[in-house]
Length: 472
Image (tube, rainbow, N blue to C red; front, side, top):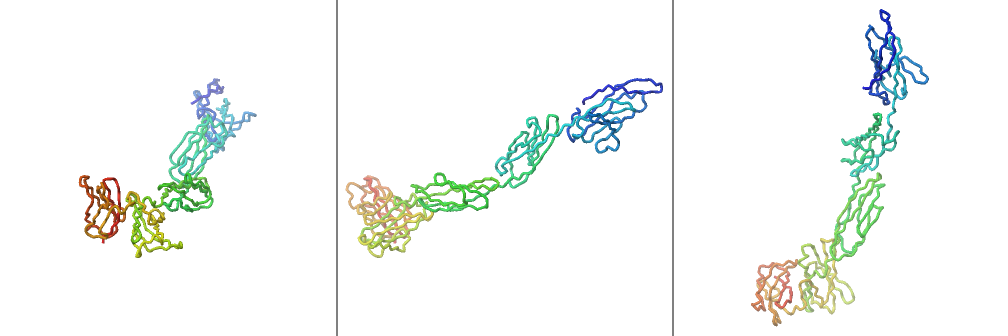
């Protein structure tokens, strides 16, 4: 508490009519006479009342130029409250700035004290980026005094605070309104506040509609997302598409050598500038390659064609087959066969027809491979049927024992054999010792289900032969 000591001569006449002087102290609250607009101020007088039975206090105020003292009456209850030696200014205002106050005790004038009223700091703020998930930025937009001379207290409305001038804040809940209050204090300890209500905008929620698998080289693949008025959309497939504007795109896929994954993304921006990203992984598949097929067309005079898939990829596939033939006049005739094997009721005649099979990979979005073959066509992967007459498989069809015999063994013998079913799955294998000089093998097949099978024979000289057989 600061005490302003003002030497005042007060005349008192006691019964003995003795003239004496005393020291008068005008004290005030708060601790100095510079107060803030709207703040309550308090003055009181401290005197030595000895030698006087009672003291009367009269309070006055005036502007310094000109000095025109006005008594603070009992009617001034709106602005003042007085109680003998105490004067309370209930609400200082700029009107009272540099006002003088004095107190007269027992009709003897005292010295005066002045009051300086400091205006409250005026402050405004703006904010940007009210998108949920992003940081909202707050900035001081205007100030009545140097912003660097202020101290700050931000209340973001969600139980979080900051004391820096231009903070950034993340809100945990979107699509919600918050009252943000900024309180500032200047070098005179004058405090002012301002507030604003902001709404954290819910982000767009794009979702990509479209297939997840496509064939290599497929054209006009369509992707769409929900369309909202005023929203903007930006599509991207790295290395393929960068396009903005529409809520949908069409894509011409490139040709790939092996199954390749791509990421399709769309960024949606609403009318508030809020953005959100959606991604979808797409598999671009390859056709069922002829290198992964075992095609066994028979020579003229036979009736059977076989189309098997390499066992290393069978578990990834869901295949069906479309068989047909092309006549001499280029007329295509489809045959009502969708199985892996194709049995003609007329002899195969490569002089008259070209035969083909189209293999559809249903699991990989119906990618297909067209295979045209003639009597010299014999496509295979691991299975090498370049000389099917090198082995003899009989009886065919069979139901008990299958005989395998090397027709021209030379210095070779059978080292092993493997049996595959129509799904390309190995169901049996056997290995012989090199000392056995095995030119013939007898394989029990009575436990096999009816159907088409392939036997793969390996020789000690490294040759591999394959032949199909039927179990009745």
